[in-house]
Image 1 (tube, rainbow, N blue to C red):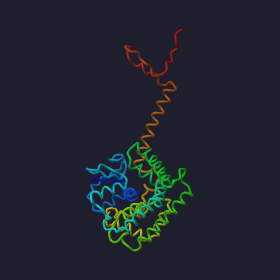
Image 2 (image 1 turned 90 degrees about the vertical axis):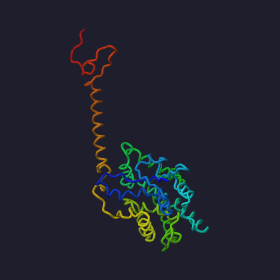
Image 3 (image 1 turned 60 degrees about the horizontal axis):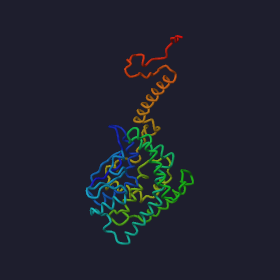
Length: 327
């Protein structure tokens, strides 16, 4: 089995802080399957790619198996892992299984919309974090329009979850979404208590889903997100995520969350090196096109159509003649 997941594309010797800041996008709500696979001990071959179109399903994460083909929905990936007899929930009782399903539904209805809003809809967070991260990790020219298309899809997804076709970014929507998310966080904190995992000493599907939703809020430094502060006040949930990072993602846990942002990070979207080169190239192309258009429209350069058989010479491309026509 092979799992395709999102990762940052970094130049040698560059982008260390960017990876610390933004690599948590590879552990967003859609990355619950990688956590579940670690919990169940599934022997997956991980393919870390920065372009979703290169995955078998066109989205990330994606699971490819020899017998069942490919799938991308988190629930489908977990089902496929269970079919391969990698089950992290086999020790749960019937009551615990029912509680697990109830909390997963609560996550998708209350916490997930707030997370989508914080990462994709909030204007400041989208411009300074989400669009910039995806733009830097997509090839030219996809990086100029693909993040916007992804934002539109996430907005439609949020509207569908909330049942509001006119939902837009604003103080009222933010207040409502964050209020529901805070209630969900409080319920999760109460259920977890002082336990290491939600159901005993072994992680389950619920632990994978909760970790997948909370990791971005802990790892990504968002400029405008009250929900992050609310999560910081719940110590047991923070400890829960840190334990999973250290036990199952040790390489990620070594990356400092509170590392100071570099001057490159603090700049605008076009202050970093990749954007700067692309902007310079586009400026040159636009300037050349403008000069050629001006030359054609003003007659400085004229293009003549040559009939077949007529010799082609320098006169076929020439400037306007200053000779007077004969009567």
